[in-house]
Image 1 (cartoon, helix red, strand yellow):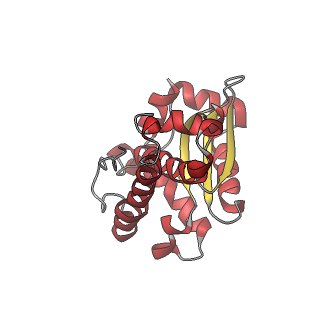
Image 2 (tube, helix red, strand yellow; image 1 turned 90 degrees about the horizontal axis):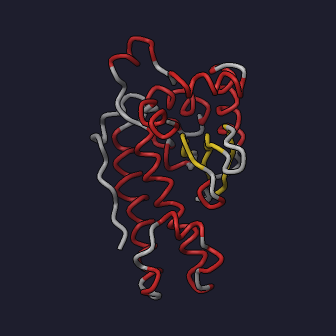
Length: 206
């Protein structure tokens, strides 16, 4: 049975960029609902209950038709939210001092791929701002050539479904930002960079 992962920080730790009330609802209500619905779907087919979430997402063509949509949506929601909580965190002292951003090999490869870190942020923000409806924006390593790419996924689809390696993600479902930002998605996107946990992203890339 899948469980809601423990947050590695308190719900108010991302203030003022992501407010505590949004975090509380997002984590304990929305994410918990995906976990509950995934467990309910898998309870009908016990042979799938002990399969990891990534394996579920990579084998949707083998999931029984009766629960396939429920598994796709809720396993996707569970995976993406669990990943999202890890790639954000409290603003570090270094970040507060203006040293925010990737370093080392990751920064070198971002500069090589996108021309500069600024270009990378601009492209990521453009994708996040233009995504129609609800979904996610990902920074990932392509499974075929290892190249760094940015892409959108609708609903709770994600790059893991097709074997890519996610490095960074932004949740642009309205429940992720609407209490604080309402219809000002660009402001949410810009402020979100302040809480990106680049140490974790770099560890994934390494």
